[in-house]
Length: 245
Image (tube, rainbow, N blue to C red; front, side, top):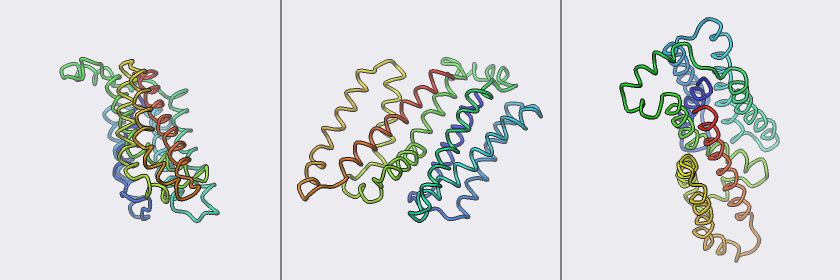
């Protein structure tokens, strides 16, 4: 449950980012304040004990702050500094995830009370833990998924900023595709998910062919690597639901 809460807050904070990669220092500070406030609210509603505040809540806060700052700078830093910031961004996302999954992902102290309240709503039909896991996984597929994919593209030398001008709609199609794949895999329709993957290639083929006619470009790498990274984010969301739901 603690991991799902952290992922959900990260997803909400990333949704509040500016539409462009560049974010000002004041906006980053505001995002951190909003994120920490949401985590504190979650901790209070979950009835965290002092031990929890110095363990799980500390991982929550440090992980969120590090992710917002490092991922923002990694997309806009000078080329010679970007590798270090990208590494820090990946670490700030993966380390808290693994720590909360392996060590701190236990039910919050007031989970039973919250579950009793949830049973009186539609949430009770699927279970509170499953519902929170789905919400967290879905939120990560949106803006957070886009940031992760762009970091991967930059890391392999195929920056999204230049190639997305030729393959338009990636920032919108990516989240839609990931949410659809998450839904299909969650209901056991792996075959239908494979059809979606194949259909994307067919729909993009005219654009890929047109851009290659003028000479060798890295648009194909942008499409292939970006799509694979996007699908891995969707798969990660499905794993979160399976493990914690």
